Amino acid sequence: MVVNLSAAATRSGERRRAPRGQAVKFLDDRQKRNGWLLVAVSTVYLVWFLKVRLLSAGLPIDRREWIYFAGMILILMLGTRTSARAMRERRKADQPDSSI
Image (cartoon, rainbow, N blue to C red; front, side, top):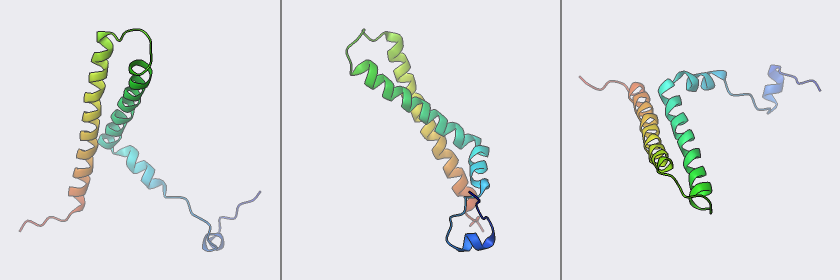
């Protein structure tokens, strides 16, 4: 199968791919990337803990696991704060300076 990538093909209604700059922009924004990584990892652990350890029958939960659970809640809060801070800084940089 041959795909025609000429200008005529794009005018005929075929969807064009998103520019690579959007993906690179997200990867370059270290604060935003780390914030979302913290949110993702802590959410996965919290869901696993609730589903496997807390809501199912099994061995008693150790003190260490409760400490990990509380730590993941703190990491989740830290990650959302970091992501929000990155968004706030980006919004502030986009707005023109209104001070006279």
